[in-house]
Image (cartoon, rainbow, N blue to C red; front, side):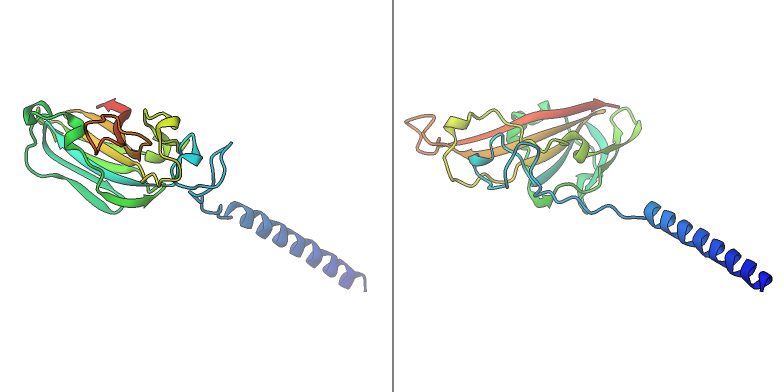
Length: 207
């Protein structure tokens, strides 16, 4: 009887150890719930896509990738490819303001895919690589723009902002482009001036 009692006690201790280990292992392997981009930032209400979201924040975005002053250039982001395997001229050589040449035409893209992977060869023949994390750059999810709240048309839908990655020689610049309808014409002689469009440099790094 004593042997049986000892065996039972030993088995109980063994099972307790196994269960404790399994519980700890489950805790280590627990998968955190996926972040919902529609979750409002601190101090904001549910997303409306209008000026009521002020300060404006975004849950989705458009994307564009461009290369200048490179021999070869490749930008991969959100399962898409941007760039060129041929030499690209400088921004200045195009004879147009940068904002007139850039467009975020891919999307909408849910915040945020894995970092953009950039590989390129500069004009001096240096091979370069970079990983550009939009989730880090736009961690607060705030829209970068220079429009005034009182100028924006109430209840009008504000399109998703554009994130534009530009490789310029050995520098990578990240811009945000925006468009908004305005209450009044900026130029009374121009019937199409009741809109705001802008581009803001958000991040820059030279390699």
